[in-house]
Length: 281
Ligand SMILES: NC(=O)c1ccc[n+]([C@@H]2O[C@H](COP(=O)([O-])OP(=O)(O)OC[C@H]3O[C@@H](n4cnc5c(N)ncnc54)[C@H](O)[C@@H]3O)[C@@H](O)[C@H]2O)c1
Image 1 (cartoon, rainbow, N blue to C red):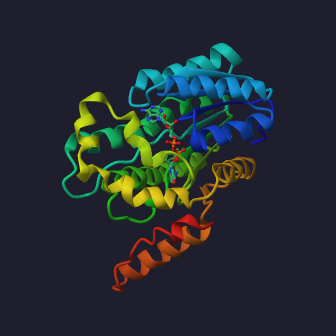
Image 2: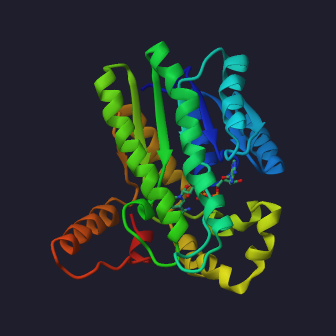
Image 3: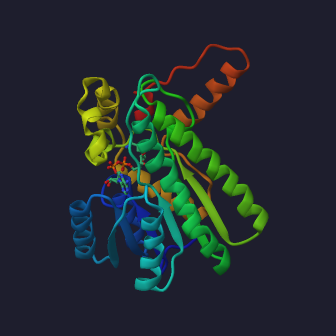
């Protein structure tokens, strides 16, 4: 899909991978609707993009609320008369597989999985009706290989890979001009390891518990050694242009961990997730 003149909706668009992709897509001539839960950061992002000549609106959005995601579609229709691409990208990470409170599991799954489901439900029927559209769902290398210290995150990201593959096949069967890609990066230099900043108030006591620091501690070094979000944004734009399903900015790690899993399935040794290898493209 050519991006020039198209309307692109990005969740989690105020920072990190979402904002970097907004910059790239605006440069390619798209107009943007950015949704994010951090209103001040979103306002800054919109101002910064406008200063660079982008046509953009920001909409305060909590992707755990289906109505908010539907409102993003309506904002695209009201401001630009259409919507052509949705990047279901907002995400958070918290908790290990052992002893993470159910409420924290639910938060991570609500943002990382249901946020994507709401995006698919809000936009795909419109795309099919107009016979034009593109869905990009953000998963992770943690959606291709289980990693210690990241139980809820891996559960959500594996699910995003699964739903994206299902959607790929359903769209192929529909023979419509609607496509999907799934983004599975390794570590990227963003604030993902500081996700607790967006935890609902009811979970703040969990966020302050030292046991809950596991993800932040494990991940912060790897995130800081990760690739620049602009590299990921470039990979997303290339995938959209060429209609490529797998978007793998850390392709070697993605393929290697998938091969090691297959060996494990055939009776080989359990694979271990190599965090520092997942920082390298
Ligand atoms: N950074 C990495 O190493 C990495 C690796 C693989 C996948 N990812 C995924 O990339 C995506 C983007 O994350 P990032 O790395 O840019 O981190 P980030 O923290 O910089 O950006 C995430 C954005 O999502 C927003 N957000 C959080 N909860 C939200 C909610 N309920 N509703 C709406 N917006 C919400 C945040 O405010 C933030 O702007 C996430 O899905 C993340 O899981 C990141």
